[in-house]
Length: 490
Ligand SMILES: NC(=O)c1ccc[n+]([C@@H]2O[C@H](COP(=O)([O-])OP(=O)(O)OC[C@H]3O[C@@H](n4cnc5c(N)ncnc54)[C@H](O)[C@@H]3O)[C@@H](O)[C@H]2O)c1
Image 1 (spheres, rainbow, N blue to C red):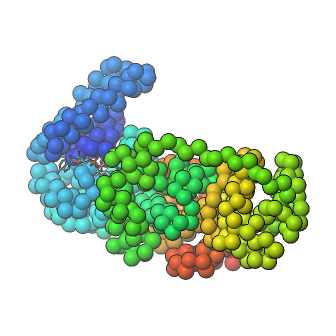
Image 2 (cartoon, helix red, strand yellow):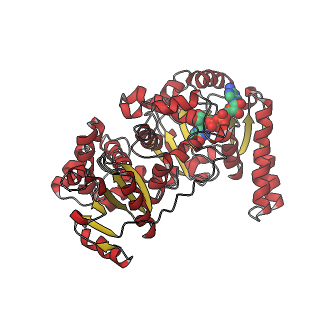
Image 3 (cartoon, rainbow, N blue to C red):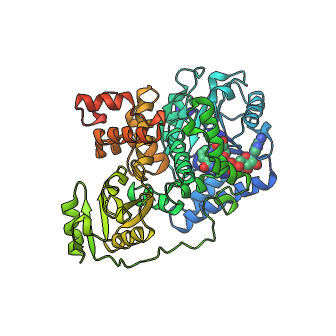
């Protein structure tokens, strides 16, 4: 059926549209690129020429293939040129009024059988479809940035989409070399709903002073294995776009974790939009702050908590003297929950920090309100000697990585539990849409359902955030002794 789409229109040749036009042309379809702005049209043409030129230089395309691809794409500023298109996809800015006005025009210009698709990241496809006389032929086709590289396409059907159309569009996505995941019309679909909640949560924790920007970025990159930290990713997506998506999510869910963090609003208002404006959370010119490499002056260290023996053995192997907590210059309390209760039981509570080893590379170092700055510095130096990146943070439940990771996993369980998407589709979408090494359900299984459930309980007890309460399904699986959520039949 995907063979019925031979001529496609792409409206808006900005960041996404130019890449989408390239994807269609490379798959052998005839493409009509439409831009409102003549300068943007030339940039779109330049993108296609540049990208195929680079492929030629790398030997990925022959001169003849490149000429064929370029020959399949025409450029225009007139929507009327879309009269014969079989499918038109729009990639104009994420503003509902613009999209609705465009779809009214497309409905008038395009032949009645043409499919009208939107690349919206979060807006209601149903509301866009309702502006046309053909809501059955309107669908979401959500590509990821950069479109030629990212393998995922979310195909979004609405309650009015014709039977079978989602399947045809999914086949088309496959013909483009993409992996489609078909879902219903909910704000943010799969990827942005899970991703933006996590990114916004990171911004809120930064605002609360849990940890610093670079420390949170390092923790999630090195500790959770994400391709980049949340603030680097927010800058890449664009803070204005991220803000808009959070607004749309919040309007639908009324979950306050989706309400854009005030720091996002402030940065956007100040014109700091991320990479596209040169400055966002990070600044393009800022030097990569080399972390000061303090040599620990403490010779005597005590280790408390689960795993203390093993960790003590590593410390003595590195030349540290292991002593009792009462006599130690530095007390490391291995924990992922607050350690201030341990500190107050010591004669020198200022000498204790909480220590949570995350993966092979990161060590979260939690300072209590009693920890002296010297103690924290010494602990950081000691961890660097052991080859770990210290992530200084406040003494709060689950410290940094798990405080960000567990609610994201919980959201994925809730999404599955609501019947919105299958476990496999959610895992596929997060891997192919975000470049994550594993999907949330694979991560849940690796960490252990009970560990995550208990961590969520601790987070809920600390922050009293209703959506941190473990999803009922997660709780039940732990109670039932089920070890892998992926064993559930879809
Ligand atoms: N940027 C991303 O990472 C990303 C990823 C996935 C989806 N999206 C979605 O894709 C859409 C486009 O985003 P973008 O980042 O490419 O935006 P962009 O601002 O880079 O490009 C939009 C282009 O549309 C043109 N345009 C505006 N109105 C038009 C009209 N009526 N007719 C023709 N052209 C018009 C503009 O001149 C501009 O060149 C949005 O809905 C966005 O949510 C973006």
